[in-house]
Image 1 (cartoon, rainbow, N blue to C red):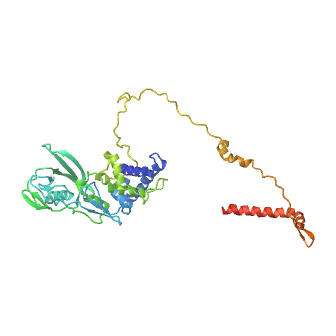
Image 2: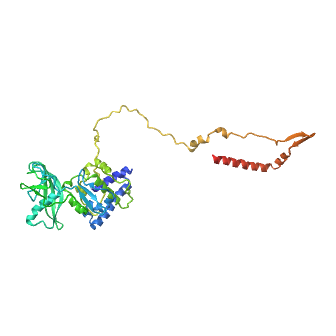
Length: 411
């Protein structure tokens, strides 16, 4: 489960563009592990190995990152709803109330002769224990807990599924027994909610209901049907676990979890397609988060390599590429100098550089006329302008300068 959570987070940050060897990715895993360790210490009072993933996720605030009930296993009707008050509500677990069909599949217990309808549920195990413990007054203070599932064959070579249980009393294992699911051989038919016992259809004596409401994480784990334990964990649950764990990460300089782009079931599906052999089961999801005093989060190195040609030297098909064309290696042009780069700009419009203002000469305009028998000349202003030549030049220079400035600014 730890490797799966880390693998899903690694795939997510890879989609963000971060390489697996990026120091920030390693810091992210360190932060997630540190954050979960802190939470686990608070849950168990210092015993990290005693904390299961459900309790840790509830403490990490998984209800804030998942909406609605989610399937615990792939393609399963059994679902969990994480409540905001830290409890879990379950549904779809069944209650042993299916119909028993003569000659069909059935479940046999260790403590009674009853035959239960398939599929197996925990309520059947509780009923079997009740039938065995009542005659000897051993039922008081006992509870039934699932301890494992394994596949086997019977004496005739037919496949069977064995569900192991522990009977707990005063927090200790009082005794153990098993329930066996067989594919054929039910002795008789019974209606839904009934079991066959010595040729008679009888009702279940006791049993866990289909679901529980507002239960503690440990009670929710107890409600999981034994038939669910070996199923692959759902993408929804693993995505919720990755988001809650990442959100709880300590500040180690890693990449922070973002609510705008969280881990999605689609991300988990992509990771699962690349790592089909290390997908956790429901049993893995309810196991302790660590065997020691710290939660270690790191991707597994057991990714599935793609198939391809053999890499053994000297093996495989020889590919003939033809004669060597002796094509020389490409050469790079020399780097141009600053003068070479600027010369096209500096050499623009060379005619302008040789432009010279042509020489110009002018005379003060005068006028003359004859009137009343006399000749009159208008040239007094020339003497006046010549006297104030320097002042007029300065004023005109200022005027043309201002005119040019206005023209440039308007452009």
